Image 1 (spheres, rainbow, N blue to C red):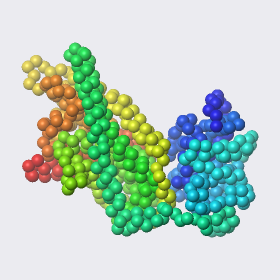
Image 2 (cartoon, helix red, strand yellow):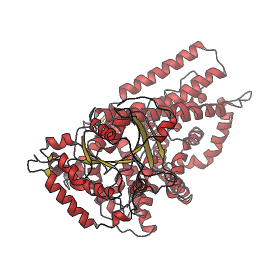
Image 3 (cartoon, rainbow, N blue to C red):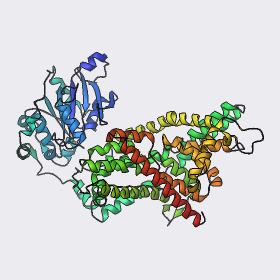
Image 4 (cartoon, rainbow, N blue to C red):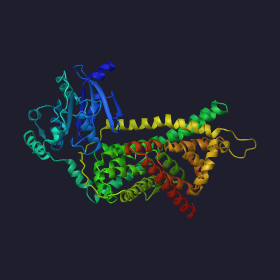
Length: 629
């Protein structure tokens, strides 16, 4: 596969190859293997469903465009993702013709489920190639598939691929070269699919399988043996709880050394700047605004990467769908199905992909409730706030000889978010209408070892997202906050730090009247405002505010000792309670607006989350004071 650059016009006129298949068949891995870095991601017109398109040059030098369609089990669409896939293949989307070639990717270990979609697409009359993926896994299990006989039965080219191995795509590229030159073909109407009953399609699948596949020597699926334990009604939930508990313990234990290194580096850089520059506005901007703000957020990168490492490992090895099944009964008790688990789990990274992932839920009411509770999952933007307060007020000691107290508190905060989301879902399902529960139908992929390449790419992408926010949104807001916190200066004879008399100080003291009942001082009130753009900005904002609030030469990259000296325990607990329910950032509200096509639901979300946050903080603060906090 060459990497020859083609003119933009030639690329635009290159044939379009559409990758299509069931979820978990390795389709996206094959897409990444073929296109490499030559891909772009956007949304389909009118919807927030991701459109991933790339380009490549075949071994014979022919240019192609490659489109990775959303996973589908059938062209009889039941979800927005399947509707997009159906419309693109059938050429029903405005301004977009049918693909020139459809590459149907199937899991060689699960042909019985995958072949129905192949037969449906075949009825549209488009040129097709069947990519028999995961043949390495099938051979290891003793499953024998006669690819030549399968090609004759289907009347199309069949190639074997291994998407996770280098060179595993070569047979597919050679097959595409063999179809050159491609002639324009228009898909038949979708009625061609509906003309054949599903029962007849399934009989044809069974007939073909009986001819081309022999699983009599199947050594047995190790995944089934593992599932006997992992999906056990008693052991399964216990294993899930232990896994989640260990993850949050590791977030504090493993991250300690790199966090200290980053903190020491930022502090040393601040001392260098202070030593090399005369006292003035520019030095204050660099030390107090940029280093005091951005440095306070950057230090939490190791904890975020450790959390995502575990999430990516569990996702890549095939455990997450099992967790959905384990939680189906629990979620059914509040009127949701286990299918909501994946969107809610995605919300631990960020509520935005969680809200967008809810489109795979068939029931519109279930989908709406999942969107409304997704922000209650503790997203990674809250982690810096939690970590800062926990480090300042919770002792770093063992409990019971094997648990870290700080990790235990973090686990409780995440658990509080989950419980509150379930409570809100229970309430909404009984106020929004029918609470009829739909049965969960979800494919369980085979277990396999996580692929290091996928883990590395996932962590690198998460690090880039975090660092880009630090270098753009957070940096911009910190500079703006520094400016508002520095001007106008203190009058002659002032008894308070200069920030007290600044624009930000006036705003903070005004908001203090609202937030004083829950224990927030004017410095915290200042930090809450830029936190509406991105929650982790609150940590940087506190760094800037307290840097400008110091009367000596203390550097605000060390926020923990400053907060532990100036806040009461009741205030710290109240702020943690606030962030369990904290009103959603503006970017998430805008995505909710697009997904629901209504301004009503983002306003409802912001309103109920603010009310919950205020009530929870008020109760926490008053109870903590009653117990001497």
